[in-house]
Length: 321
Image 1 (spheres, rainbow, N blue to C red):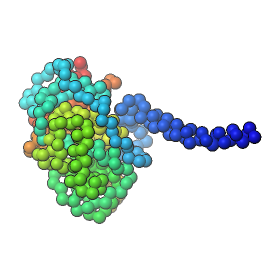
Image 2 (cartoon, rainbow, N blue to C red):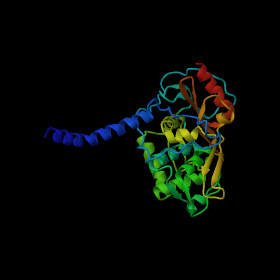
Image 3 (cartoon, one colour):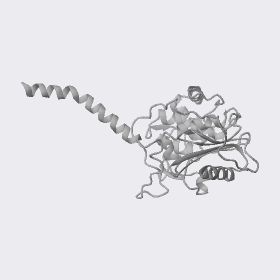
């Protein structure tokens, strides 16, 4: 009789034990801070290969608290920038502490920095190996692109996400937006809804890619999006990738991507992301993230005449401080 009671008790407790195990596994995967998975090199994988694709369901929607960027206080350092950007910010990605600022609430066109929000919604809503059917909408693009998409083909979700962030593919942005929301207009509504949830008062989107001047923000808001993006493992993996080789429905079955992140191209120590942008209206825009000496710092530049000089100069001063 006692044996039967013990067996029944074990059966009753089994679901709780399984649930606890699943929770522990989740905590262990994300433990070690928001940057624990950045640039984990696999010596068995060629340097040009894409990072391994994560498995499973889409991530849960990101938190809307703990992302504050306080503009109180004074700059931690001062530098002279020849032909200064219209707006800029240097900050600690983990704490949100602002180290340097220039017109942090000035609203400007942000070009392809728009794609940071597109990527955030994409990783929340889409699975890495989910097939995305390419429609005519994705082929009606201008500017930067993957450029090899064909109507009616199906491309892996994560391949398009890589194309979105590494080469700033406008066609990839439209393909993901249409796949996830049914139309780009509906997806843009989601972008603006998320912006409101995050309290981004400077920010407004009119497309998923950022070609239009109506995609606008300020460096303070972009800092919030940067902090949030760098907490997402899938975005971190891709942002740290300079060259990628990915599955693609074409002859040879591969797509090769080469990024144009200013700091990565300069071999700047610790560069791990994040996004470039350019239009005639916006000028050169940039979000650069660097992890070094246990600190993760980011620089944001809007309408910079020379991000390849401005970004390293600001980050050098920040890390010295």
